[in-house]
Amino acid sequence: MAIYNAPLQDMRFILNEVFNVEEFWQNNAKLEHVDMDTVNMILEEMAKLSKNVLLPLNRDGDEEGATFADGKVTTPTGFKDAYNQYAESGWIGLGGDPNYGGQGFPKMVTMLAEEMIFTTNQSFSLYPNLTVGATLCLLASGSEEQKQMYLEKMYSGEWSGTMCLTEPHCGTDLGIIKTKAVPNDDGSYNITGTKIFITAGEHDLTDNIIHLVLAKTPDAPAGSRGISLFAVPKFLHDEQGNLGERNSVGAGSIEHKMGIKASATCVMNFDNAKGWMIGAENTGLASMFIMMNYERVTMGLQGLGGTELAYQNALAYANDRLQSRSDSGVKSPEKPADALIHHADIRRMLLNAKANSEASRCFAMYVARQLDFAKFSDDKEVAKKANARVALLTPVAKAFLTDKALEATIDCQQVFGGHGYIREWGMEQIVRDTRISQIYEGTNGIQSLDLLGRKVAKNGGVEMQAFITEIREFVANMTAEHAIKDAVLQATDTIEELTKTVMANIAERKDEINGCAVDYLQATGYMCYAYMFAMMVESANGKEGEFYTNKAKLADYFVGRILPKINAHAEMVKTGSQPMMAFDLDYFTPAEA
Ligand SMILES: Cc1cc2nc3c(=O)[nH]c(=O)nc-3n(C[C@H](O)[C@H](O)[C@H](O)COP(=O)(O)OP(=O)(O)OC[C@H]3O[C@@H](n4cnc5c(N)ncnc54)[C@H](O)[C@@H]3O)c2cc1C
Image (tube, rainbow, N blue to C red):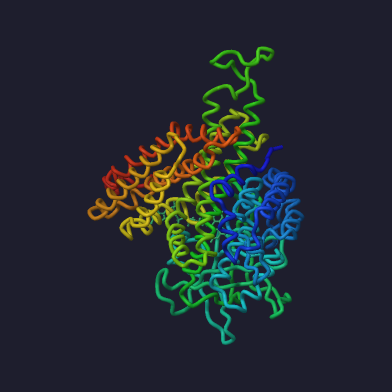
């Protein structure tokens, strides 16, 4: 069976030493219930739950998968018990609003808990995760009545939530959705349409499911300005929440997928189902995006989880597996061969994963910290700046973390040779499960367009420049002597120059943003990781113990063996979109069937 020990030391290092979280918590009335002792307890409890309950279900869940019969979805054996345990321990409401039964913990804490469940069971994580997403949406845009009705039941896990956006003909371009919402005299709406790929659209874990559905009212303006959001319960209920008759919404089937097989991905049919509008008419997409800013960082954690599990298992294998003699001399003469771990190329793959794991954890926490400033700070200026930083970096956190995660899981799979390709060792499952994180919640291509188009080009690169200034100021104040200092400064120069180049080119070439966005995001991601390593090196500087000295060594590895990739992406951005657009459309004519 796969092994996992939560990286609690690294988590505590990032919380306490890199970001000094207690200072913010203690100086903020809204977070006075949060202290390090409680947080340590939370982390330790989640470490146990994820290792002892969720990890053992991961492989069997993949083998058995979610199943569908007669409109009902059954989750794999053991999922219901695990869900009950998870819900009863209060994990779903950990970050929820205390006014409605949540525990009010900041994102920097919930994020670490989420990392652990994503690491040990990506499929399972999605059930509570979609509910958390739906609660954020309700909290941001719902009426007081809706909040009172839904939030407590969702935080407790009694009811769950979904996000119903995608339709057969559209996923990215939600402006062209067809689902209709026709008003009734009693203030409700009749919702009709088909949504596809709906995670946890139907399952056997909760008594009720609240679907948050994007739909168009009869006279809605065309495009994304005419989308409204509705709460559509699986079972109708009275004002006390007592369940009544079944609403006319149900699963038509579930998808057979490459990975996350234990997560039910449903086709949902709405046939004049009763729904209630959330927020004002035609503001549905905006409500959804408030929530998504929060959740996209969480998707990055799915990538981090895949990396961490793959790394821990590849590391164990590399120590056990004997193959060939080490180039620098025999290491285990009593054995027929030396362990894989002695080979530099094996170490390369492991260190790629390890560097990704530590940098992405730190970066996710950096973004979580900004989210916490935005949500909890009493200082309006601090909150405003944090919001702008979150907007800039959310697409990077989602796309870069998941892109690098897939590479890391493949590196770790490679450590196993042929044994990584067969099912027995579990590595192929990690690769399959992690792959989806690049696709849903807005594909990574779309995240890149968001970064370069909306977050950089639209405001003349002002926010990116502010971020670069922050990084340079940090480096100027560093006391550690380490190669990361120059490396991170060079990375900021690269991004500054690239931003100017793209801004100049887009004036002349209409396809430039579309053609450059992915490489621009990748280059930005490497700069962000460099900044994270600089912060970690500075926090480790002068401290005794292998944990700290190894931080500096891993930063060396990052500078020498990973960061140079920024230059390749920079060159591709400079080349621009012209090589793609140079072809006549005829060149892309598909072969006849
Ligand atoms: C397992 C799974 C679970 C999911 N869960 C949910 C869920 O719970 N709720 C929900 O609503 N949806 C869910 N989805 C849907 C998911 O969010 C969409 O699949 C995704 O957003 C992409 O939409 P699409 O599949 O329609 O692809 P399309 O929008 O058709 O895109 C196809 C390709 O074109 C690219 N593209 C599109 N427009 C542009 C452009 N302007 N410029 C450049 N490239 C472009 C995209 O990046 C992509 O690579 C899930 C999907 C899967 C597979």
